[in-house]
Length: 84
Image (cartoon, rainbow, N blue to C red):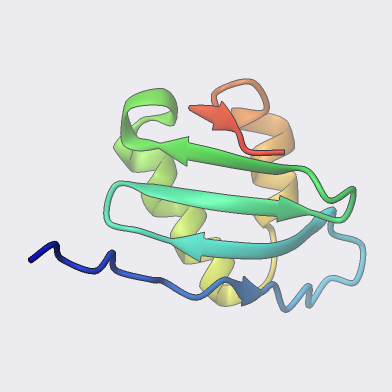
């Protein structure tokens, strides 16, 4: 019998600063999936962005502030893949 995949809910980004390009996020063990207000989705993994950066992204996502700025300034092209 095949195991059912673990489904992790996508969370709405709080956007406490009011100007973020981030709309949603999904936190997994080794990665973060970011949904932007443009409806594009990107996966940032420990391998593509570095584990320290992924940890920081998780911290900012949960805080609801600073994630878009962090991605824009440090990680823009360090995604593992574009989902859509």
